[in-house]
Figure 1 (tube, rainbow, N blue to C red):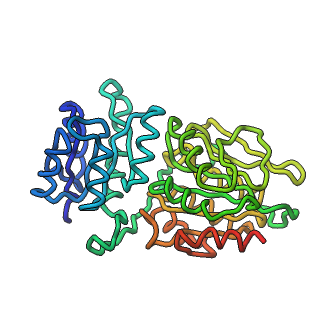
Figure 2 (figure 1 turned 90 degrees about the vertical axis):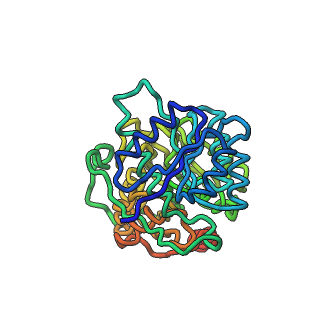
Length: 360
């Protein structure tokens, strides 16, 4: 099997060494070189032709964002950003994702050896997914980007919300939309909600993001839509025209009193290695909203949410998944499709119109 050829770009010799050692544990990735700054990296890209880059943002001679803009204009390729988990880091990282980076991971910490294995697993998975990502495919050789999706069952959705026999006879209420996304999702969500009017049913979003990025992401979403987007609060009433985004350290569920719906936040353990987990949110919709729900699954690595999206389908919801061609990584949508959870498979730029149609 051909290995993924990786170039590491970081001004810290210690970080370059740490990352190299992490990737040496993977039989599927080969570190073909490292670079201390973008100028050196530019020459190594020409010489070595890597499949994927890891890229630090703050570097000498040229910052990471400037380098990324030039790269995406002249030689588009998959990039995983190495980011600091701060408010400033969030803004810069979200800008990098807008420019064309596939994903990001936190900068590794030297003094947290007890969590290094989990970090290594996440980093390796993201580089593997990035190697199959859809990066301006018209300029790149055709390549399948369907990622085999395997859910980590060590802590599953039952830790937060138990499976129940779903009552498919739900009292009629307003529609409510549940949206899950991961890799490529920060931009996909923004592009989707751009086409939604203020009269759109409420949307609850579980996007895989660290807590330091949540507020910035919510602000960016709010800037591009007629709807009102903000971080969800526990016990908050859900109203038409609003977008409720899960904080990065909480699972987002939905609850109901009479005909009114409310946000419910849970600080429980990671589910499928994620918090927020799409699986948790979708199961709560299956049990509480049923046929009054519209489920949406956008681009993302892995399979989080696929099983519970089928539960939503069985409870009477109408589900839309993003198609493979427009997805950065067709992991979560593909897993939902193979689970039999989808009623509609749509390109990203047609999902808003489908939501409006289903909402009437």
